[in-house]
Amino acid sequence: MFRRVILDYWFAIFPLVAFLTALVVYVSITYKALRMRPSQIDHLAQLPFNDQTPASHEHAAES
Image (cartoon, rainbow, N blue to C red):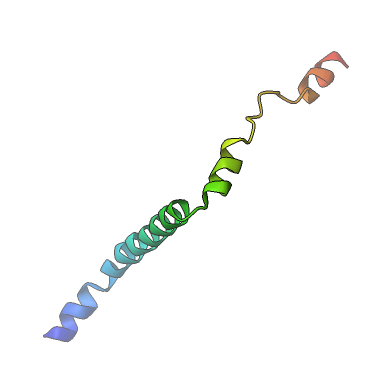
């Protein structure tokens, strides 16, 4: 009886593995973000945004 239950529901392991994988990824990212040193947070806060777009498409249009 138990063998039938285990064999009938073997495919239920895939959603469980996917959920556990996603959980590990999100928890590790959250843990790393919460454990950052203040100096590293300040460094990342000072990084500039890339407001300039590459001009390579403009030169191709002129040729």
